[in-house]
Image (cartoon, rainbow, N blue to C red; front, side, top):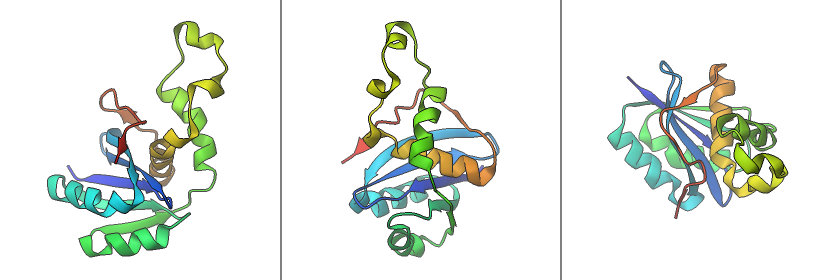
Length: 145
């Protein structure tokens, strides 16, 4: 089954998720340095059957589209307004607080720099108008350096 890539673009780092729409599942979620994004997406396209790339229309989206255009995949830009803000709430839906952590303020448990992959997930969910689940225990804080 073909998979899609969703990207939350940024000047320094980008959030990226690899998902299958028909199964409503996320197979990979990562934060990539912007300078490494083109190579990382190229490797995914080589290894996976990618049908389209969905990119948030915010910061540096035009530059990223130009870099990825030669892959000859359908590239769609989609509204990403407030995705970073919404990613905080979505994080706790995906990873509910348990145990003694429940007593701590939520803001202490999440670091803003780790929200880019969840922002990419929200862009994908908004585009598809469905909620996705995680295929496995994915760590959304993973950085590709």
